[in-house]
Length: 173
Image 1 (spheres, rainbow, N blue to C red):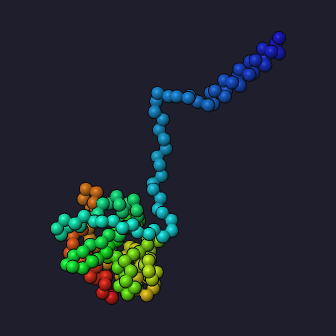
Image 2 (image 1 turned 90 degrees about the vertical axis):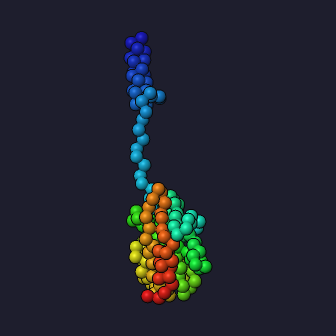
Image 3 (image 1 turned 30 degrees about the vertical axis):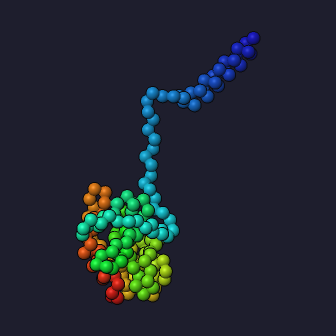
């Protein structure tokens, strides 16, 4: 009889330990979850997504969220009867806006690979921070930067600044 009581006490002790280790099954106090890590940079080349800008007179705007969600976007603009293309991308937590054209090979697309822009057609490479050519057939056509302001979740640019960046990009030098 004593053996049964001892065995029962041991089993009861084990059950209590298991229940205590399992913790409560419900709680009236909200549990905090760990803070998620920041969204990591995508790996490999980031192909651009095309978006439509909003044009209102001489002001062109694109949503910051489109750039942050896609990391690399392209957008068209027609001004003075000329069709032009531009890119905006995130690099080192900063948004860059540049003319998106490679005149010798007639490309209008660039992938972002780390801190390098790679022409989709001829594979010429450019410094993403400066737009300067690194290597390839079209290095003499640096991708000119477009000044912008951020307002109410949008990148705001002037048509004249976009036209100047585009015109400067299609000239060798």
